[in-house]
Amino acid sequence: MTADRRAQIAAAAARLFAENGYAETSMRDIAAAVGMGLGAMYYHIDSKEELLARIHEEYVGSFAVELERVCARDIPAVDALVAAGELMMRHLHEYRDHMVAFFTEQRRIRGDRFAEVAARRRDVERLLEGLLRRGIAEGSLRDHDVRLTVLAVLGMFNYGHQWYRPDGGRAPEEIGRVFIDLLLRGVGAGQRPE
Image (tube, rainbow, N blue to C red; front, side, top):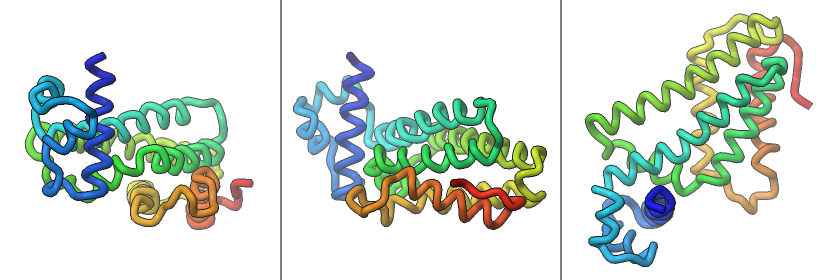
């Protein structure tokens, strides 16, 4: 129950941070949004900074687990990249408030919490680098600067919280495929997603 309650609190905080801003949202606002008293909420959460780090972990942590599954599949790297692109946009669709809250307010996370956030982000980068290196080894991708490509891909997807709208006319997975097509046009050895 405590893990579920923490997830509810984090989801409410993400929504409020995304709508109103971190500084403008009080712990009392968050407690009211989940229907509990302030004291009861402090039983589950220590601070707003902890909430912001938890918001990051909920979306990046779950994304990293799913991306690891994609990377482990016995499929060509290009197909895995397409699946990763679909996953990134689906995740943005499901966790948009989390992404807005985190990317707008990440500078507020400090110390050990920041080290945890940075480590989780490096996990995602390593997984994507592995997919790109696999594509090079398979011959489906040209030899290129893998690190720079990962940063470009993450920039493309992570900026999506600024413009993506669920009612925008394109499914998240379709947008993910278009983005990966752009990547393959740049570093692919002629193969394109369908």
